[in-house]
Length: 353
Image: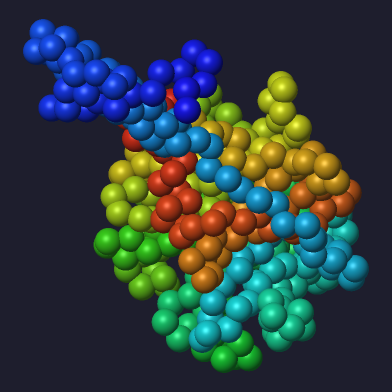
């Protein structure tokens, strides 16, 4: 049956029958050339469609889904935290620092919650804040800032390491001391090919920035001289989280409010040597949404079940805040790598002073 404007074809290359009649050899030659030309253009179109689709997919912004819950702030002050898997146990290492800008060391402490039951399983570290954690085999290493008075100016002696294998007995030692009138804040530790690397926050020469230290055993740390990360424009760069997936170090850090964005936002950068850095074209990777005030800060991550969970703080940086979680459907390595698409240009910055 023929439809209006449609011709029924029964002819392929090598078949001389067309609309019920036999094509002559010249007609057959023309028809075959026409068919091959159409096939040629079809294959070219198909190739470019696939190529464009692949390129668009490659440049597609990695998807982070903010999960619809927040940690309770009743009796606590959720902010700095590190989720870990310790001895097959899902835990959240965090700090309570009541009093805001007037917090006193005697009131502050560190605690560990079971992420599956919600119960507190350890409380320790009186007089500490700005906590982070790193699991090394059967030991949980906790790094935190010791302080007597919080205030607008920290009264602190530096960053301590607390280590335990049972979450009951803790060994404490000083690992990073401030230089001169410098004040220290957050820290984060990861393993690389040579040992361990720490990124630690300072208020010198920029309030705020972060520096680096190296260790072979998590106990003795050597500051790396001449390196200070101050972002693209010698600017506020706080709350560093550092991870290493060969050949790159990756850092998530807090950027000050900028025009067109909602408050404090989280940026991502990478480096092969801690000196030269590239900024992700998808910055900011986290920005406060509805109900989150004007802050998405203090990011830490947990890879679990092939997925990556970003724990981050919300609030207004002064009077309130809590912790929420965003999900990336993939490994931590994939999370970092997809934020730097291949064949793209990146803003470059240097930590060399």
